[in-house]
Length: 219
Image (tube, rainbow, N blue to C red; front, side, top):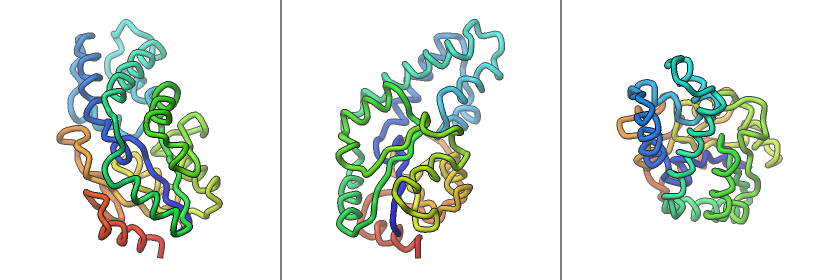
């Protein structure tokens, strides 16, 4: 294993539950009540893709897709700013990987102010070797672009990497990139969201035992 590629929301920071509280308030204020099966498709994808879905589902909304995306992102930022620390144990894993000569990259769909806040608050640039965002690649998850770019920046082939994800879109993106994926289930996230299918390993805390199993994925 030469590199571990980390999703951010729900893997490094427990932000998903706050995102959903803010988005529910936003859309309910517009008279739109998003059913659960629609909301879970948002996880791991970009704000523009998700707001275009909302426009397709509710074409009578008075906002353009661009205007809706701006409001949607503002809600996400409000949610993100309620998070104050990295999920316990994740930083220790990154430090251990560095000691073993394994690089760590953040591969997130987040962009703009959201990413700026996360980088500043959680000191991501000090912890990780590189950060690849949704604006760095042409296609968002579930396409493989973001993980392929993260692997390239780490100087590793896809088969030499492991992805840590929590969403179905992320699992699909990892497999499309030819990378095995460990699914983290320890953050509350979107209440009632199904655990992603297709993971190569599932774990609910950043323990030494889980770390050993993640290491085995690249063998």
